[in-house]
Length: 307
Length: 306
Image (tube, rainbow over all chains, first blue to last red; front, side, top):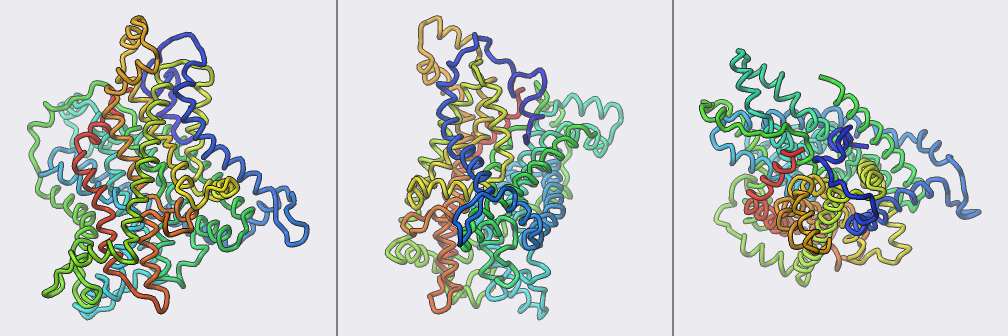
C-alpha cells in the first residue's frame, strides 16, 4: 500500500497512460506469469508461512502446538522488543528528517542552476549509494575507532579527548551518520529527478509576478515534488524499522552497547539463529511489518492531503 | 538498507512537456552556494578517500600513521592487493566469483522478469491485471526481514539453503523494476506499432523481442544497474542463507575477515579488509561512472511521462 498515489491514481489505468484496449483475455499472463510465479514463491509464500508460524509454539514437552495469539501477547509485553523498537523509533524521528532535509537542500541547489560543476556534485554525492552497507560500515567503523581511526588521530594531534563515537551515548548517532552517508545522495537524486520535470514556464511567470527564489521554492518546487517527498519518506521509514546491517557489523567494535537485541531486526535474527525460537521471531517480524505498513500508510495519506 | 529503497527514483509524478532551457541560461552562478554544496560532496567523498589512502598501508602502517595521509615511505597497495587475492588460498577470488554469479543470474534474471512483466502489464488488458498490481505494491511495504526467517525455513525444507539458489531466487524479484518497466513500456512503445506488427502477422513474443526490447533499452539499463547494486551489496540474505564460506559473496566474506580480528588469538588482517573493501566497491563505482548517461536518462525518463 505504499504508493497508490503515484501508482494508481483514479481515472488512470496505469502509471503511465492508457492501456491498449484489447479484448480482455488471459494473454497478458504469458508475460506477467513468470514474474508472478517467483513473486509468489519469495514474497507471498513466506508471508503466509510466517503468519502460520506465529500461531504455533515449540515446547520442550508436547512439541509443536497451536497457541493462537499467545506469541503476540508475549511480544507486546516483551520489554526487550519495546526497547529495540524505541531505538529505531528514535532513529527514525531524528535521522530521517536530517537526511531528507539535507538531500532536499542539495537537490534544490543543484537544480537552481547556480552551481559551478553541478554534474560533478550530482555524481559525487550519489556515489556512496553504490557502496555496500558492509563496506560503508567497516570504513566508518575504522574511522570512528580510537586505535587507528581518525578520532584517535585527532585526539593525539590536538591533545584532546573526543567522546567515543562508539560509546553508549553516541553509538546511535554514529549509526545515523553512516546511514545518512549511504542514502543522502540517493534521496537527492529522487528529489532532483522530480525537480527536473517541473515546467520552467511556472518559474518564469512566478518571476514576472515578482516572486523571490524562496517563494518559488515553497510555492512551486516543493508542492511539485510532493510525490517524491512522500515516497522518500516512506522508504526511509521502512529502512529505519529494518535497521540491521550497520549495527550488526559495528557490533564487534562495541559489544557492550550494541546488544544482540539492539534493533527489532537484530532481535528477530538472534531469536531465530541463536535461540532457534522461529515462531517467536516470526511474530516479532510480523508485528514490525504491520507497524511499518501502518506508518507508511499514514505518511502517504498525510502527504497527499496536505499543502 | 532495503532493496525496496533502491529503485524508487523514477516513480515520482511529473508535469508533462518539461523543458526549461530558456529559463536556465541567464542564471548567475553563486560561489557561496557552490561552497556549501561542496561541503556535502566532501562529506560524501572523505570515507572513499580514506579507503584509498589506507589501502596503501601495511597492517603496521595502519596503526601508526595519520588516517587521512599516507604512511611514511610506504606504498603497500600492490602488496596488499596481492595478499588479499592470495590470502587463505585465494578465498577472496572465490568470493568475487560467487558475487559475480549472484549478480549475473540474480540481477540479470530480475531485470528480464521485470521487463517482460512490465511490458505485459502495460500493453495487455488481461483478467486479474488490477489484482497483480495491488498485490505487488502491497507486498513492497512488508519489511524484507519479516520475510527472511520464513524464507530461510522454507528453503531449508526444500534443501536449498547453503547453495547459490538460496541467494539467487529471492534476488529474482524486483517490484520496483516491474513498476519502472511498466511505466516505461506504456510510454515508450506506441500502440499503433503493436497493431501494425499484429496485422503483419508477427507473434506476440516475436513482436516483443524484435520491436519492443530495443525501445525499452534505457529503462532496461537502469533497472539492471540498480538490481546489480542491490545484489552486489546484499548482506542480510546471504548472511542467513549461507553457512559455508565457499559460497560467501564478498560482503559476507569481508565481514568475516573483520570479525576474525576481534576473535582472540587469530591474525588481525585489517589491511586485507581495507584493500578487499576497495576491490569490492571498484566495479560498481566504475559501472555507475561509465554508464552515467544511461541511468540518469533512464531515471529522468521514468519520471517524465505520465
